[in-house]
Image (cartoon, rainbow, N blue to C red; front, side, top):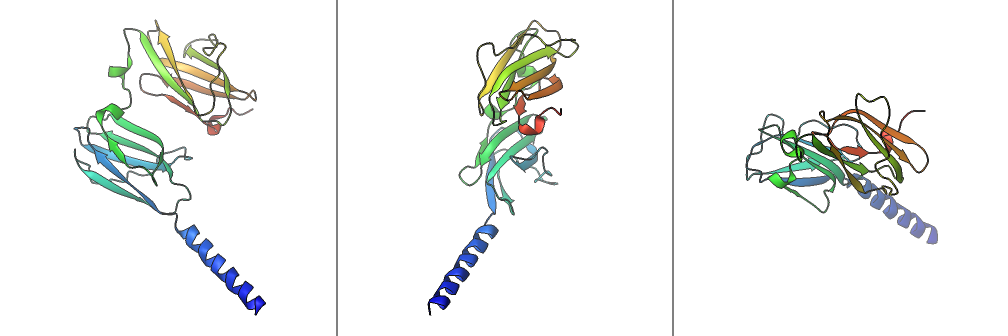
Length: 211
């Protein structure tokens, strides 16, 4: 009798685990309140290095409309989401937990573009976010045509994992820069020819320089 009881408990446990494994289906509702038509919509796991296919396909998402995106077969509810509107402006949302959050996109969510990026003539900035799991100890930003790295912009500060540092770049004619980060293990992450008028840096372990 005890043996049969244990076998029954084991069977129940297997069934529960099976249900948990197959329950990795999610969805996210994305509402467009930008005033523009959303032409493309990309939703990818946060660990992915590339965007998956456009989930809108041949359709578009008009202003005021909502699109439900079903996400099946994933182990984690954390996704990155990028939208592109009819003016080719982009709206990117990082590390969205779709199990607890939907997206309502407005103009305030627009990724910075060259038109809104320059603080004044020959002045730029770049936001550098540390998602490496390590502390960034040194940060170098130099014009792409420079033969050497400029001074460490962090100075006596560090950039902890999960934090973002805005680096202001004044007096430059060109928005193209090379960027190097060095973490607490002495490992480096180098980004060449970054157009800071259009792109920020999201540093992850996938960006680690090869030795």
